[in-house]
Amino acid sequence: MEAIIVKAVGFLLIIALGFILKSVGLFRAEDSRVLANLVLKITLPMSIIHNFATLTLSKTHLVPIGLGFLTNFAVIGLVLLLTRKMNGARRAFFLINCAGYNLGLCVLPYLQSFFDAEAVAIICMFDVSNAMMCFGGTFTIAMTVAKGRGQMDKKEIVRTLFSSMPFVTYLLMIVMAGLHLRFPEPVYTVAGMIGEANAFLAMFLIGLLFEPKIRRSEAKDMISVISVRLIAGIAFALIIYFCLPLPLLYRQVLALVVFGPILSVAPVYTERCGYNRSVAAVLNSFMLPFSLLIITILMMVMHI
Image 1: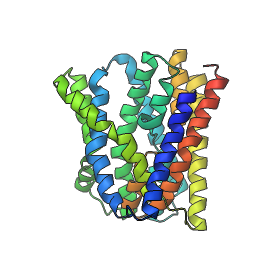
Image 2: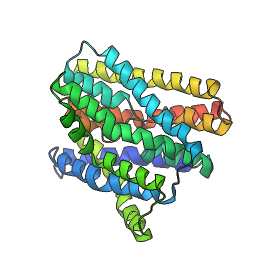
Image 3: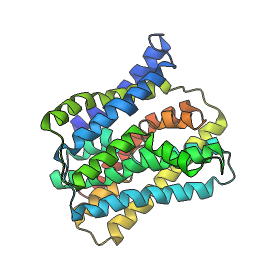
Image 4: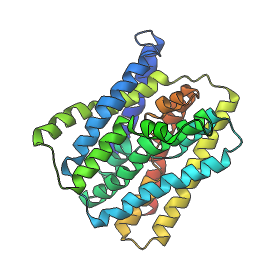
């Protein structure tokens, strides 16, 4: 448990480092664009490729993959309903920050300390569909909403979807896994070397985007996002744990991951949709330890 606490505190210290270095002038807020491109187009795709090095698809993994899609679509539908009277940029903010889970940076390393390899595989399978939604589907829907109904045709939607390098990488790796194809081993080794930088850069990016000065209306939006994520997480966890005819291990793990924090690059996507990126950065830095706390409490309740 001590190692996990150190890691969680370490993430927060990296966020603080980014904010402090920006405050003293070593970095500027404008540098976040370069860093965001580095994360989205280099380190994150390399991390995805490395994660598929030991991952194999089987029929037993269809359930967590399906749940990854269902949970995301359910929250997207709920948010679209609740925000139907809001302007496009604000609705996009809620879509990006309410739907999806950041599992790779903190939840997966955290739960690896308590579960065996089979449980880790369940998390990875859930994250396959979850990440495809976060980096592709949800962002595309958010951009469509932000630009206004009817302003994005089918070609533009497809262009937006496939302009996401993480989405394309996930799609490629899933197809290869389904066909039992693999890159040469050195490719995974090099990808792992580059991908190791992703956690640091993603947290540092949040620090660069962090700006505590936000308006009261934006603070209310933050509270609303936290409420939606918490209520949705409780509902999903109860349904998964008590209603689904799955082995206990599956139900335990899946009931935990639905409390994962917000996507680390959510501030970047938020800005691209026309909303204040600082709000998403502040929200992100709060949700990281909050999510780990909830997951820890649930593991104690389930006697894990």
